[in-house]
Amino acid sequence: MPNDFNLVVRNARVATACDTFQSDIGIRDGVIAQMGLSLPRGDEEIDAAGRVVTPGGVDGHCHLDQVIPPPAKMADDFLTGTRSAACGGTTTVIPFAAQQKGESLRAAVEEYHRRADGRATIDYGFHLIVVDPTPEVIATELPQLIKEGYTSFKIYMTYDDLKLNDRQMLEMLAAARKHGAMSLVHAENSECIGWLTESLVSNGLTAPRYHATSRPMLVEREATHRAISFAELVDVPILIVHVSGREAVEQIQWARNRGINILAETCPQYLLLTSDDLGIDVDYHGAKCVCSPPPRDSENQNVIWRGLADGTFTILSSDHAPFSFDDEQGKHPNGEQVAFPYIPNGIPGLETRLPLLYTEGVLEGRISLNRFVELTSTNPAKLYGLHPRKGTIAIGTDADLVIWDEVDTTLTNSMLHHAVDYTPYEGRRVRAWPAYTLSRGQIVWDGKEFRGKAGAGQFLRRGLPTLRC
Ligand code: URP
Ligand code: ZN
Ligand code: ZN
Image (tube, rainbow, N blue to C red):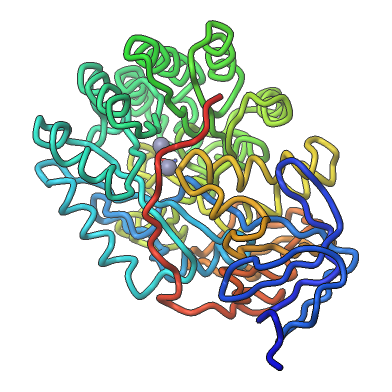
């Protein structure tokens, strides 16, 4: 008689966004087939006694192999990026298919499928990045792509090659409303940043740390308020991404109190880094932590922690934007130490997102285990039309699981599986790490080695968002 299951995870302490309970998990053909106590044997067994088991992480914001102006080039492609994600407990990623000016959205989508196909080791979808919202894009391409499962797009209020003007933003939000898509908004005021940058550079203040001076909280607060006003005018929910501190949080809470449907994302860098990590004086190592918005200070970190606990934040993503430090395509463009406006923006974080939040959030008592699951898996799955296939542990759902180990170790880049030559969290103590990660029932990480396969990840045609604030 063949066994009932390909794999049984036995004696698990299962944690979902709402419940924590004891169960075995029987997996057949990549799906959870049965749960309960004393399940029959499987072909393979993992004893999870004494261990927490959560749904695999869903990272709703990461950049992989994204085309950006040379000489910069992202260090991670779909193989190294998804490998790293899996080793840190993430089983679904949603990176970006980024339109170039003058390019059709369809061409961008096809290009990113070529990049991911045969390389992704875990399941993935794509958000669109729309930089050229022509009438054709808005009336024809976008609605068609939304129907095909690209149900969210990011729009930028800053970066010269990416930003939309206010009218274009309104048109994109109106399209989102009409077709039910989710808009992700990068909220920073471009003109203020340009003015401050010019003045800093002309005074010779060009070290990495001035990146933070050029993007103070005010520029994020103003753009957040403007984006909220547009959402109110159009009457459509939006997600403010990578929220960094108090003034943006206040805007979001103000909007919610007025009944405006604003969702919010934050990232580990706003909980764990400060602007001091961008260096002192002319220290170029600070380039490692140049990202936008920049990390703030400890008071702002506390506000972000409170927002995670009190429901202000909907999701926590990595915003993994991978550039190596000692690399002429990375933080040393053409081999140089450059002025801050020329340092590629972004930091790596796909693999460390869950262990750091588990350590600093759950084990330090700042958030519950269930809230951890909600922020990192269930809510992104709902927000991006993947729930219940992804984001929970229940019969009939994909067997994407993390079996957690409580450890006590010092994080070093040599432990990680990305292609970036540093982690901004070097030397931090971590007290939790996946003992196993399962992607559709396959062990992709066993606590020591990556066991996934290039091309095993499936493209996810996503439904419409099923989450409101
Ligand atoms: O600095 C960052 N966050 N780079 C990635 C691009 C973005 O705006 O998310
Ligand atoms: Zn952004
Ligand atoms: Zn980003």
